[in-house]
Length: 595
Image (cartoon, rainbow, N blue to C red; front, side, top):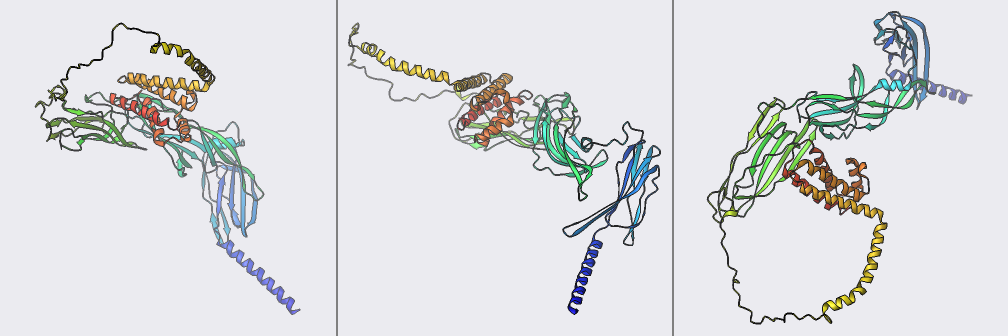
């Protein structure tokens, strides 16, 4: 009996400790008391639902006066309580259904309740009552909620830029906190006609807090692109369209009181945007202006200023800064005719940011003097338009003097070409020869056919022609049956034809780049077995990557296609065209190693 009584006391003690522990945990949790409205704007003939929710049970609940409204239902109570992993979850809600009594802006004042001996209050909220609507209190569908909660916006940095001035377009997707985005896919990407465009990759989609039309939203940057308008006047930026997959909450709840979500997809568009591109002013435009727009530095430097004849030096013409670095031609130095100058090697180091292109472009000239003397490289100027102050600016390089200290003496007039100077005739020691006294002459008029070389050739020719004819017939039959091979040969022939046509058209910008682009297309058609209509830069990049082509060769090929596109809007020099032609031959040669 004593043992039984002791066990009962022990069990009662354990229950008491457990209750005290639970009570301490409950008291440790933060107490919340909130007010939620079914909508913040409603028609005069609609109803408003107001919920007062608390996470602890309380006493002496006092609702507000609901000025401007009449209570047609409520208060109704709903209680939800559950245990998850030993933790208690509790929720109690008082619900009112109201109808407005007049139009205007009203405030639902605070309600109060006593929990644990303390008084808690809700935050007042504003409601706007408008004129009567056509469908009062119609139940919103999942698609309606998604339409109201998703907004794709294209933010344009400048609405009135100058010609060739950078314009940044940022596409932001605004999402209401009421829904959740699970995925998206592009439906229609803008082509940016009359713009030179450069995408800025978005490596990470991070949600940020913001506002849209005065309401709190979360937004994600989906796409950034920098545009350089190539035409003045009103230009349209085509819209970006996306299909968004979202989870939308419903009014239904599961067994544990959690809200049930429904999946749906919606198509959103950023809408077409129009910018007014200002032409560059004609007043004050320098004669040597080549289309540079931005803020630049300019310099002409040489690797050395003193050398010997037949040695080489490098002259570098460099433009650096911020602007349309890929869309203008560098000025050419005026060098003395007595210096041998090779075609320049073009080099660039350009990075594209959200504010535009930054970096430098360089032309490297190799110069070889042939004679001793002093050769001045005169100052040259570079002009550009600065959109910040709306003025043209010109930078002049310093004059450079080249001194050739050792070598043959040339004409004192440096403007005379070395090719016109007299050259010494160096004897070789074999100017005169003795007359041959044994000529081994043969009689004239002797013509024996039988036993001659021609006789035996004609005799054996039929025997040799028979196997050659059979082999040629089989070869021709195999070639005729190879339909794919014939197409490849035809495409290769067309590629060579258009590359040769492009070479002939050097100096004629439009004809050259049309022929070059056709030649490149026919080459890929032959190698990749795809129709011309399937061409796109992304597809070409993916296919060449699958073929294990080097990245540099892929970038070179895409750069050539880009040059062909840029030629429609930008000035191109003969030097640039020659470089593009040589680059095309080099790229095709490298691709042949992998395709």
